[in-house]
Length: 406
Image (cartoon, rainbow, N blue to C red; front, side, top):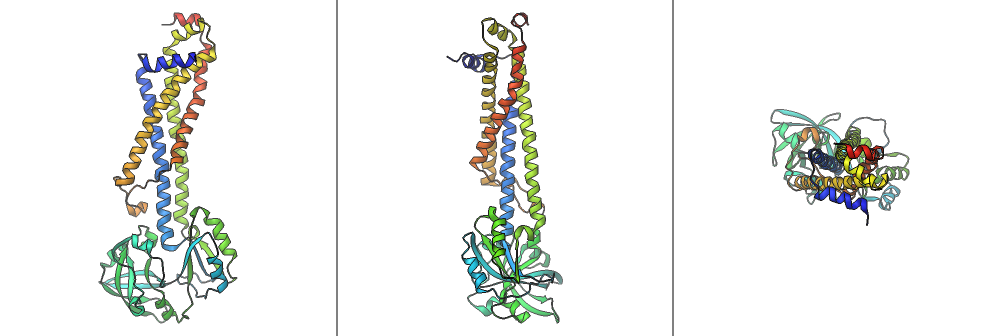
């Protein structure tokens, strides 16, 4: 029989505590809250990163290919993708799909309001799946009728609100060039990405409009958007794509295109690590305090066990087993609280955010079983390792003085 475990079990379950009762409850609550906060922090940060990354890369792609040019304007220089470049992209197993586009600055004039915009032209076969998920009203451009498609446009809800426009309205866009040229458009759809840099700066239309305005050839494009299968491999895939391009072309990853957003996301990782350390310290301090109180409360028992011949190591195990019980109870309650709040938010979005500040209108949650198991294991192991130190106080207790202690 494991005598230390038997005594610890009797103390933990059947013994009536005295003044340590409140301290023990506080320690359990500390472990519970620490684990729940750590679990929610990791889930929220991962949710933020995933949601915002999906928003940005869904609109501009993961890698964009364009012609190497010293011109720093919004308008990309034209080029004809060579057969070798297209073949290289098609044969890359890391690439999901790629599509051509071009951009041209313009000014929308409507309802006595003026708004500068970057017109993004796309072709037939453009992947509309992401835009369709964020449509507030209307539909995407229908390329079945090429003449009609050149008059259709999609704008963001930000632009629509600024210009007091809605789906079905028409307006004139003045394209910036020498001499300036204008084109009429009909709004067929309004989308809301939630990222100000995108909603404020872009509108979607037919690439052939830019070709006609700039006198490009029918196969010339301003750039190629590349979508990869695994975003975690963005950098190696981006390097590989660049190595396979013609000398006149260059590539740029979405992290390089929107450095401010991705720098902010990387800072969130630092905040998470700091929060995890602080919460772990809170849980450990509570458990150390509770263990010390329990040792002081059981001083008489410690003296009697030593008098009966129990070794210091076995007496230490009594309190460590008791600590495992308390930490385990705190972990169970912490999982219930943390997972409960996480699932509640994941399925109801009850906690809201200001989209203009956080790019999202609700707190995102991304739970992984591996994260939950790792946090539980780390909390248990760290608590037990640290609790070995206060439990060594047992070896300094004299049996004679302990039996007289009241």
